Length: 444
Image: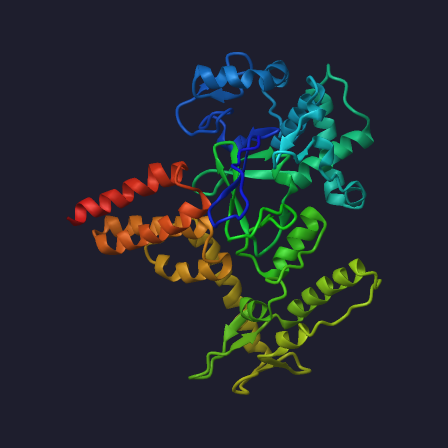
């Protein structure tokens, strides 16, 4: 679905695309707590036929029937067995393509530009050489054969093409807390490429995906629109590995090759008093990352496997001086750190990374003020997770009756959420605004 006023220049916060899914499923972990159609959380009732899917009201059940009626009997037949989410989504895609003229369905992202199912990349050759994905495909094929007994399945090659388009192009559907609640295929939105330094963001309102601009742009050029496919909290090396394994490419954005970021992400502060220079513990890993990306660029430019140095490796070493025995010097003050020092550094960093991830899911009463600059470093100034962190921190301060502090955090959140979600999104109008109002009223 194309929803966009005519835009020449794009302003930060503009809604540039809003789309309903081509096919989607609610995550099985949300079964019984959310509606299978609108994905809203609340009291739901089982489908009287299959006793598997749930709806919040008659209206949702009626609207879902076109997609559900063919699967209802199959879900009932295989009970008490259940079908994995991926197999159910693939079956729904098959049904959508076979029902009517689903293969010709056009998802517009401009008044004249659109995508159909076959426009999605399947990465067929990459899949065939990916053992993990091939094992998954084989398992899903057997599940589908049992689940769709009375339906003719495509041949193996065509089915693998469908599978490839699904796994490469699917979006994780998120709730207002940015938690995964389902998976969907959005044809128009799949035109957007990845960057670890995106100029747009994808957020969800139920099953609807909304793409909003994070930066001002002179014009809406879809070839230049970028969102992040992965969690930016990860290190550059981890991001590249995930992109390679999941999407079969390496990111070549400026953030992945920013020597200052690479230097700090895997660094520990020099232990000498008065010196806060970063000591880059994982310099070998970082150098390997840069060489791999440069090799990809060289191939694209027709230079074969030749690695053309762009000078990026030198800044990675800037701040550390490796020694043959594995120890390093601080590049600023010259302090030497032996191998056992580095091992301690590494253990501390690994524990810190685990704790940082846990902090996103647990109480933030102690850590919120410390987390904010960390989130800002990893996610940037305008990211939904940073906005949510400000809201959570504000709620803690509100509970502690620090009304001025709470209102300050809510205003920081408002600045971000207006851009990433818009003023009509439930997170803004149903959650943030009432909290701001409460803080203002109680402070009077």
